[in-house]
Image (cartoon, rainbow, N blue to C red; front, side):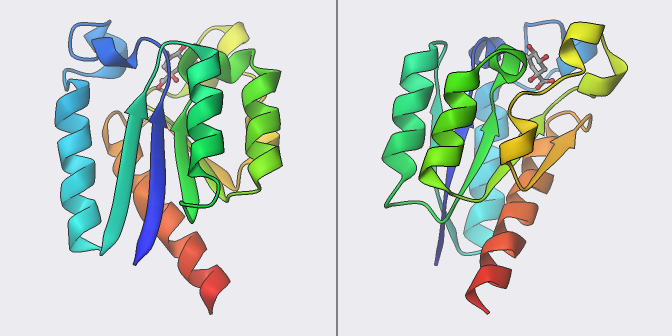
Length: 148
Ligand code: DQA
């Protein structure tokens, strides 16, 4: 069994009504249900959290330490600013996949830099809600490779 913690950052609780032309029409519950569905097919146990506050995201990363084999995180706007989230990921040393619904490199200049990217295994950006499912497959393969 593989354990993966999924962390959704600020404003992602508003998916579905939030700028659907950028983020798609699926709400967070729908995305989480799809993640749970894929996880059960792949024998993965998930813990999913969403928070609008940086401190709670740090707590979720710390809580994953000792439980999770890998992390999937969409830090949302904190992607571009949060040294604290970057340091937390580096501290727990969990293999991490960074996920974004939109292609952050095709948007405003301030979104084109991720301060998180240097401490993750890789990034999935631009596939809408599918980014999370691709991130789950990527995280699983990273954990399996490390166990071999
Ligand atoms: C986002 C991209 C960020 O720039 C933005 O602040 C978000 C969502 C994405 O998933 O495309 O809130 O992380």
